[in-house]
Image (cartoon, rainbow, N blue to C red):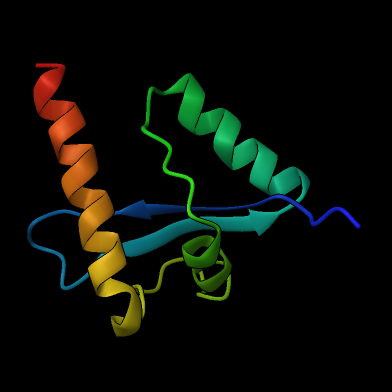
Length: 86
């Protein structure tokens, strides 16, 4: 059985207490989140377990503390990509 596609988008700025979930969804909503990221050259990181957790967070809420470490790695990765493209 095929599982429905899931996606979540995060926003983080230095003055934030923690990254914020800005979008999350399954199926067509997930496809639209990914499409928008691609259209805007936003890096996409594929991590099924993390996405499963983030899809349970309300949009606008901070990420849960138990995923800080995983998200920190992603932020570092995206920062490295941004620095390479400057």
